[in-house]
Length: 352
Image 1 (cartoon, rainbow, N blue to C red):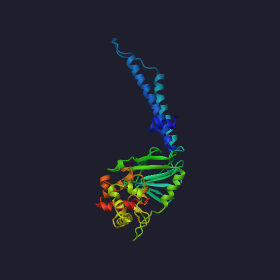
Image 2: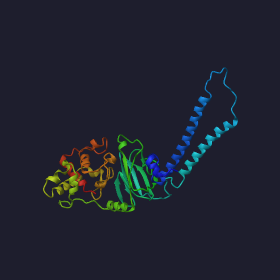
Image 3: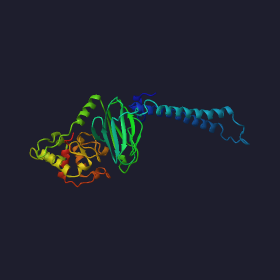
Image 4: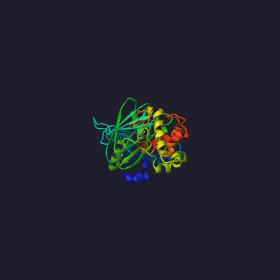
């Protein structure tokens, strides 16, 4: 079989970095080779027949003698054997060790629920809740339970194996293992509404050490402003430096401590508005109707991939008008003023 390095370079569609995806790739390559040989055989035979038996102007009917029965037997039994062979390979893969099915009674390591149009990601054994990004350790099988909150979605990470539907009221489970640390893009593969194309999923494959560090960070409660105080959390200078002028205005142009006040105002605004009705922040709100925000500043994307860089600028734009960033999403435009959007951004930027 072709090496994975060759496939990654010349045929990336057939490359795979996990045993489950490699099994599918193996079958695809075999079927592609067989079908290509059949196509070449038929094409050559047709071209030969056109040339060999073309009309040369002879009188009378062409020869009507029956063909040799041995030829009829060959091209009847041959295709039948090919179909049986390919079917056997498929069935063998479905019941093989890398079919992506969990062991009986296996508890899920991750529970992923699809919603319009984002992914709720939970690690039940670790007590971690996040959204739109999955972290897994390299080289270790992961059992994933797939659910849906609303309509039918389809979980698909091409680098780790087959697609699996997510059906409301029904639990599906898939097992995958990724061996190469890195970042890999997935998506919903079942049309689920007008933002289906922007229901992306980011798989982050960590080294064991990086994965342990990520777990520890996610388990830690986010730092929150203390009621009536303004010195608990400050906006890092690096954040202020990266922010757009509208985002960094209060930090860059205000007296010392104004950044703390902005964070405190953002925290107060979060609690006074209906944010906590949909979003969860550990220690603040427990809702689960929208993406968890407990560590939103540590994520790489926003809006399930519609924004591929999570920065203060992009977060501020989302606070100002999420409908302009992802039309049709379930978060309404709250008509925040520039200052309110700025305060919320400063607060959320502390949730790492």
